[in-house]
View 1 (cartoon, rainbow, N blue to C red):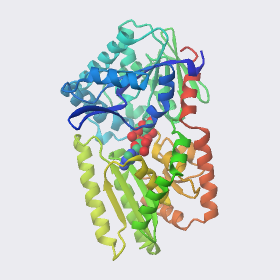
View 2: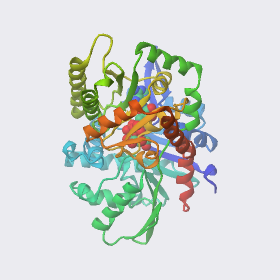
View 3: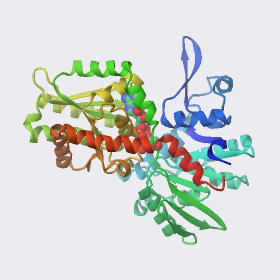
Length: 473
Ligand code: ADQ
């Protein structure tokens, strides 16, 4: 069976849709995101199935809406119901206040709460039961991300004889960090219930192997460059590195359109005679936005010739605003940007333009095209697709990418980007200045390297890699 013949059965926490009311009527809209864009053609071709939480409560006629939407899309969407209490404990609690910060090396943000862990188990068990109800013999089961680590464990308990694939979108932490978690062995053992595990980087895969060696001594591990194998209880589990990407041509072609060119012109028209440095992130403490503001401030202190000739445009998409840490972060950003602007602004020049809002595609690509520099400095990130999207949209071939060495994307993009340690404010300030004075020749040389890399290894290639590597599927 070739990868294009696979009848995909995708499982993720959220379905790739948004259900809401428009003009007094329930409506289903596709959510944006690289994963759905990349998988949709394959899902349609082989009439695949996508199982997940629809993101709304019982007040919406979910089944009816999904049936209609599935007919239009030519693949099936099936929902797993999750109650408000479960959302609180399984999703906001264990997924986003335990696994998320721990796997991003931010132990100080972690809470370890046994009730949240119990709910996490319960909801994972429910996902497993739904998979068993819907699965067919020709399905290729592909489960996604940190909210659903234990689904394979529960499928094995249900004696479902399935070949199970999993991809982790976020980093996997070093062993001594994971060991802080009271349920560390259950997590590592739970992952080993899959048959094929995909990680974003070799570093993540090596961290996982170290955890297996330390916590599951009866397992044996064989390692290769891009793949490893674990033998445990008579089974072989394949581990691979598959850096996720974007649809390069979709970004490149749309960025070259008149619509986006006009949006880019509009951005510069409103912020004339200066270079623009862009930050685009979900509101998240892993993205390093306060550190970025401070590094920008340091650049203004250290290099007065930047004054009036550079502005930072920071766009933050609202996210997880019900989690207290995220609300606090918003306050920090409001205060910091206000303080820095109060300190440096002059007639006709504001150093930081900070917007807290979602953008549509045209606006987002307009910013990508308009801004001379992208400043992408997460403290830790599984991959970071914004870095790849910025380069793919740099159709004039002369944008500059400043990138954190702790983003998964660093492995592929370090040859063309200016690399920084986001905790090093001096170093990041120097990189901002280096970008400001970089010659056109160097800008073009670096951006050519970046775009070539992203064009070669796009999201289609990511899917092919993952499916091809799975011989047992
Ligand atoms: P995220 O943490 O969400 O993803 P990222 O990979 O950067 O991070 O993707 C963010 C997406 O949101 C991008 O596609 C971007 O275009 C979009 N976006 C950002 N700001 C926006 C705005 N203001 N308006 C509209 N859209 C905006 C998780 C992991 C990452 C990993 C991905 C994919 O945390 O490390 O790269 O999954 O595996």
